Image (cartoon, rainbow, N blue to C red; front, side, top):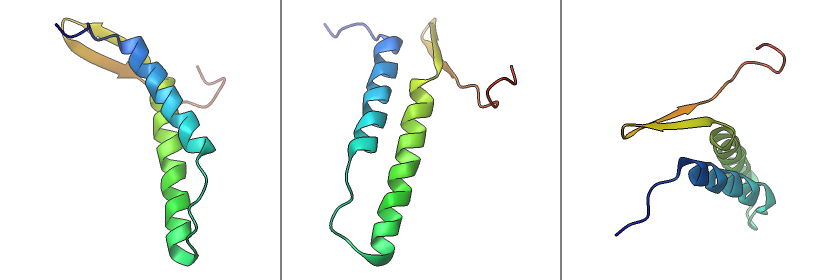
Length: 75
């Protein structure tokens, strides 16, 4: 039988992915392709880090991620 889903473990995996993107180097490409790769890496990091910082709730089979995008101190 499959292990029970743990939403907190999912957030840890997103944090690990964000860190992996941050450590990932640029491949040996030049010009527009290099710029495109760097922009995609920045977006990947942003998305993974944002999800890693979410509060998570699993209620009756519904997974809810809550991400506060307000500036620090605006709460």
